[in-house]
Structures are given as C-alpha cells and as structure tokens.
Length: 285
Image 1: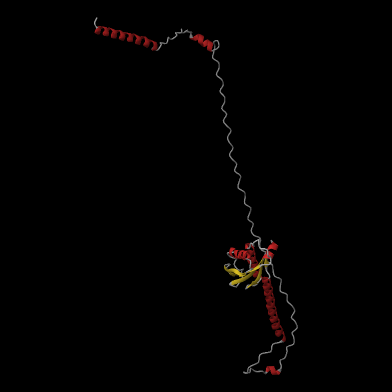
Image 2: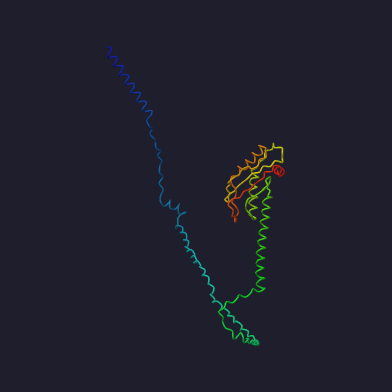
C-alpha cells in the first residue's frame, strides 16, 4: 500500500468517527418524548346522574319566591321660605304748625304835650353865611382820650416785652456756651431759636482734657441767614491756648447749617456772639 492510500484510509476513518460522534451527541441533546397517561372513562347512565342531583328522584325543588321590589320613597320638595314682608310704609306725620301768639297790644301811652316852638325858631330862615362847627362835648373828649391812652399802654407793653426778650437773649446759656450778644430778632421765637443755636454748638464742642486753666474763654461770631445757612463762623477773641482755640474752631466747622428762622421773623440775617466757657463746660460735664 502506498503512501497516498494510507492517507486516504486514515482520513476516511477519521470522518466516520466524527460522524459516529455526532450521532451520539445529537441523541443526547434531542428532546424527550412525553408519554401521556391514558385514563379510562367510566360511562354512567343519565337517570342515575339525575337521581343524584335531584336528591333521590321526584319533582325538582320549587324556585325561591322573588323578592318584591319596593320603590324608594319620593324626596319631598324643598320648602322655600316666603320672602319677608316689608314693613308698611307709614306716611310722615304731619308737622305741627305752631300758631304764633297774637301780638301783645300795649295800651297807648299818654300823649306828651307837644312842645310849642318859640316864635323866633318858627320864623328862622336859611342864611348863606358859614356856620361854625359845634364844639366837641365833654363825652366825645373822654372817648378820644381813652382810646389814646389804650394805644399808648399797648405800645408800652410791647416795648417792655421787647426789652425782656433782649435781656433774655443776652443772658442765654446752654451747656458751656453763653450768648453774649445777638444782633437782631425779638419775640418768644427768637429766644427759642437762640437756644437751638447754642445747643448745636455746645454738642459739637469737645474741649481738650490737657488744658489746666478753667478760666479760659473763647468768643466766636456766627452769622446766620434766615434760611439757616451759615454765612460766617469764626473766632473773634482767642484764649491764647492753642488746643482750646483749635477745639472751638473744630466745633464751628462741625455745624454745617442751622434751622431756618421761626415763622413771623422779618430779619434777613442774625449775628450771634457766643462765649465758649471752659469752666462751665467742665462743671456741667
């Protein structure tokens, strides 16, 4: 046997072996056939079945009596209350007309005797000459004098009020500040306004603690427009102590504006001379 025949034989044997292996493997994975169980059927006669179902024979049981249908009770209609009867409109009661009492008739007074004019008066005629005015009687003179005295008294009272107000302006004190002079302005409104000015500058003044002499006083001048704008604010009399003078200057610069003049004021500007008193300021704290 030559070499080629041997190769063909081996190849044929290998193919047959593979085919056999495929058959064996395919039978192992093939689905199993289910074997159905065959049960015998028992045949029973119909009369026996009827006798069992009907309780041993006879007529079938009577059907249950039907339940009578009871219709639901009708819903009573909603009762709408009648609208309220408006109260009867009564006519307005007639006004009672009061009859005025009859006027009282006084008995006629006795007629006074008619003065008989003097014969000269009856015969008087108009004269083209100028007639002098009648002299002022004592009663008219008294009235004129009383009115003049009243006007003079009012002027005196107003002058006294102005003097008192000016005196108050010159003695006003607020904290460590004293108003030594105010140029113009009078009346209660001027006093209150001066107090406001002193209060604002007193709050802004913070004197230095290192100053030992309490008797030092710095005088400043403040000019205010009626709108409250500060026209001028500066020191007019220094104390000679540089820290104290500087503190007063700082207070003057800290107040940027003041309230406008009170209602009724007619002056355009007011000038205030303010004394910054160190002794009073420290005493009041």
